[in-house]
Length: 310
Image 1: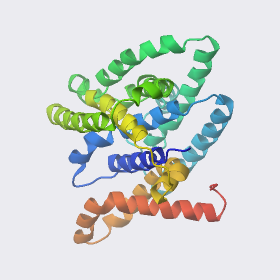
Image 2 (image 1 turned 45 degrees about the horizontal axis):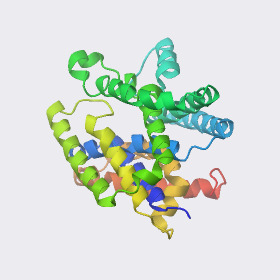
Image 3 (image 1 turned 180 degrees about the vertical axis):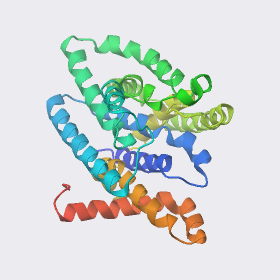
Image 4 (image 1 turned 120 degrees about the vertical axis):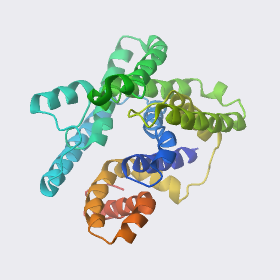
């Protein structure tokens, strides 16, 4: 029987990604927790991984191409430049080696997932799964050091894609989710209260790290790793048998929300900038919910024209 709590977690993660990407008056308060969203997406992919790599590769590749074309078009029409506006050769290198998408930064996730799936082909072909598990801590440490903890050393030369890529974020969290699936029965013998306590503890430590690092760029705090793991284990231990609206949206559209939310952020930022100051202040507080609802409406519109299945 399907555990619909996992689908609820998918929707929560999609909303946390919106919190990361839209400017709010309370960003510093939500950022430490929201950093767990993408690690959780990768862990969920690893948890449900059961082969069928070639089909997933084709599907994800088409989504990546379509998403890149969409944002390339939007950027051209709206005359928007991405933050990392590199020369052509540097953009190609950044994309090929580090999954950095030149048209929309958040699409790095899709390229990284493609690389992770390709890596799983290699791992399974040569029976390297157990050895790969041992590589998880090393890859995570490198991701943390090259992310939040190296900015103070490199200052303005820091590039987020050095840590935000398939190698230092995608593979270790994907394998962590796969490991949890393999040892699910033993791990879920523990009380859900233990994992809930872990969520509270590591959420608090994430805030502490955020204050200590002074808002450094990068995707991972040390606590993010443990917060994400505890959040997944807590979700798995809370078995929701009946599907509700949140689980239905999470199951069917969390990926669509992830891909399309930045489209609405770009459009609404232009629209809101022309509104009275009072409305702009309101938007800085309500923007995550506004973006979520606007993205949901966009998804329904695309469904109407059969551009999205479901």
